[in-house]
Image 1 (tube, one colour):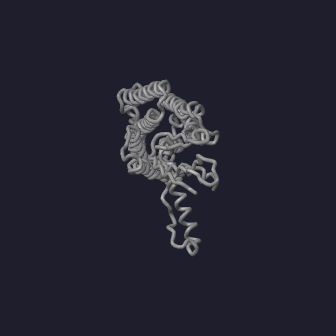
Image 2: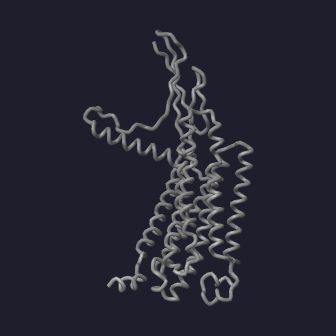
Length: 359
């Protein structure tokens, strides 16, 4: 009986797992980018999109197309099953789909990186840092171009990537070595790009807590390096004889890596709106619990930030200036005290000054 079960091991099936992990990134990517665009289009955010937003739209389209290619060409043609249970025709269709999948993967991760760099260029005004951003963007574009050239000309004829008959007479690059080089260079770019703003942030005149928060916000994408590292550990499966079974982890990680990059790239632009929404939900819940004691006061007050500064020490006659700052969701405003009688306010806000005499 044990021998019979072992002989039927090739009938194992992981197609449901693959379908799930290919499908889940699609709504995450679409919702994340759609939320970003919605926040940017709000009147309080000046109601327009920037170049980094358009690059993110393109990256999201490529990432979604990658997952769709995986769903169409992967499990239906043998991904998730042992090669012994896959027909020669299905294997060829799977390898063709894997070739298409690889194109979308390269475009998605490169476009995400370019979107992040465009965001850096927009919000950081230091000349030297902008030069570094431009040089990095050029290198990322050259990397994408090199990957596409190798995919296009790496096999002559190109059918050698997926056709067994054509592969026998085709001149092809080493697929495993090529995949290793793609993954390593991609991980190096991730580490460099997400670490770039940290020295600038640490040099800001801000509290340590704010610096730590900003560093975490802009470097959260370093988490995608964990996916890249995990992907690097399974790259060897690209050259396996049992490719439709062994490439399951590689395919799943390749679908989730662009998703992780998109989520982390959108985070700095949506987190304020998310925090404000959670606070309003919390206020609503709290107000609903004590509505019998609020005498008709609305449960959610308009969002505002304000600071009150006392200009006179007189106990009988004081002049009080109140500064109301309405911040845009996408252009954060920071307020720091400047001495005892003033404030320092960064860009992206509207001010209303109300002065009243208190006796």
